[in-house]
Image (cartoon, rainbow, N blue to C red; front, top):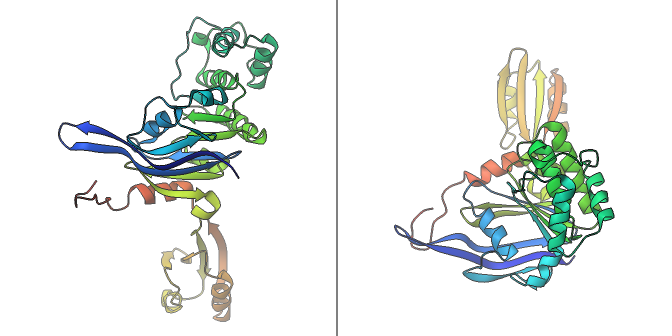
Length: 312
C-alpha cells in the first residue's frame, strides 16, 4: 500500500544550556500506510508532539526527510487534505456547534450549511444546536472537534488524545467514529496514552522513547508472546518442575498449583502428563500479551547509550 506518512532519519534538535544539542526526535524512521489507524505511543517527553508538529509543517526538522501524502513535509498544498485535532483544542466558548463549523469552514472557503448539519448529525450533536461550547461536556467538545476536523473531507487525520478524560460511553462513541473514518478509506494517526483504546482500534503502532522509535509494526505481531495459565491438582510441585518447560513458573495454590508457561508451548503435552500421573486439570486460561505490557517493557528497558558513551 502507498505510504500516507513516511520519514527517513527525521531529526529535531535544540540547544541546551547544560547539555549542548539535544535530539528531541532522533533519526525517526516512520511508515504509516494509507487507510489504516496508526497508534503513535510513548511516555511524556518522548518526542510525540514534536514529531506531529514536524509532520504538520508547524516546525521544521534539523535533519532527515519526511513525506505526508506523497508531498514533502511543509508543502502547503497538503494542508488541504489533512486535519488535526489537538489534545486541548480551543474554541470560542460563546459560539454554538453550528457557529463553530461555520467559522472553521470559512477558513477553507466552505459555507455549505447542509454539510455542517450532516456533520453535526454524524457526531450526534444535531439536537444541541442552541447550546454554546461553554455548556458542552468534555465528550461533546471532543465530538465537535471531530466534526470540525472533517470539514475539509481530509484523507489523513491527526488525533492527539482523542479519548482522554472521557467516560466509558463517550469513549465508545469516539471509538466508533474513528473506526468509521477508516471504513471510509481515511488514514488516522493517533497519539494517545489510552493503551486499551489503541489496542482495540489500531492496525499498527510505533512506540517512541527518548526520541527514538523502539518498536513499530502490526499489533498482531508485536503482541506475540503471551502466557497460558494451567491450574492443576493431584501432582507435586517437584513433578511440575521436573517437566523442565522453558520459562515456566510454578506457584502454589490452596488447592493445587498454577503452572504459567509461554504460549508457544503446547498445553496438551502438559495436560497429558498431568493426567497420566493421575492428576487433575482444573483450568486452562490463555493470558494474551497486552499493549500495556509491551509499552511498559519497552519504555522501562535499559537506558540507551549515546555515541559519546553516555546514557540517556
